[in-house]
Image (cartoon, rainbow, N blue to C red; front, side, top):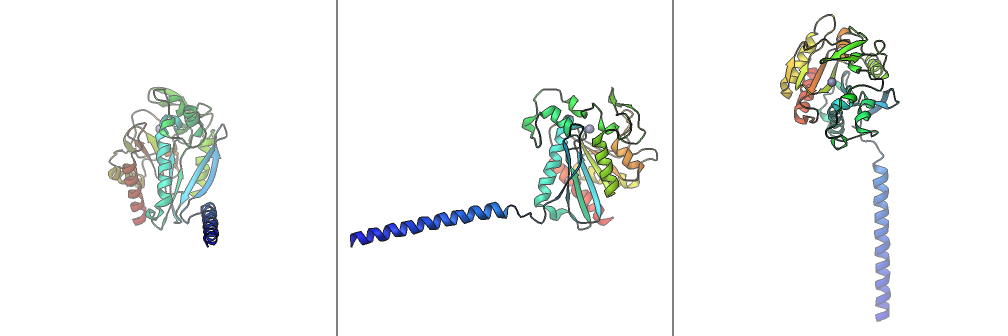
Length: 289
Ligand SMILES: [Zn+2]
């Protein structure tokens, strides 16, 4: 009797163990397979160009509307690395909150327009965090691409081979769009014809309008004011601290595409709530205009 009881007990324990193993295997199967199925709101991913040193320039597009808003981070690379982190934060946020994008809009984010400039400072491929940044080291070299060109002087608006950044002379490349990173942005814009382009920089705590030869577009003023009001950044409709030639925003103005420059407060913070409010203000503007 006792022996039979023990046998039954062993049988039950074996069955239970097998059941648990089965359940666990099923769980692992589901976990590995279900995660491979893309969610409906996962972005369209494209490689839109590559840098001088062959690093990918990537674009993520959310939403299916006709009106495209293009956001670009990191044109000044490792000197303004926080603009790249902000861009990635927006991508991560839209992956789970894509319903904030109005139906008539699609949003493309190019998070890192100067990946060689980022690499100069992080010495790390791919994604990085604030922890990867050297603490006191000078990050100015990270502003330029691997040809030592300031990419935001390499666009076709009043282009000159040498330009200025504050009181420094900087290389603007050998011709307009001589640099592959600037070509990538140009080609994406010409192919997709975005309604507006927003560049994230740091650190002037300001939203700037843009112009080339024909003054500021009225729509540029509208979106500069909308973003500035919502975010709390200052707004400046004409940058005149020093002469800038060949900037990306000026080139966009020259082909009638409104463009603004959003300068974060510092070189470290991403000012998340402020920028989310700014982005939402643009959604609202283009949803009703
Ligand atoms: Zn900048």
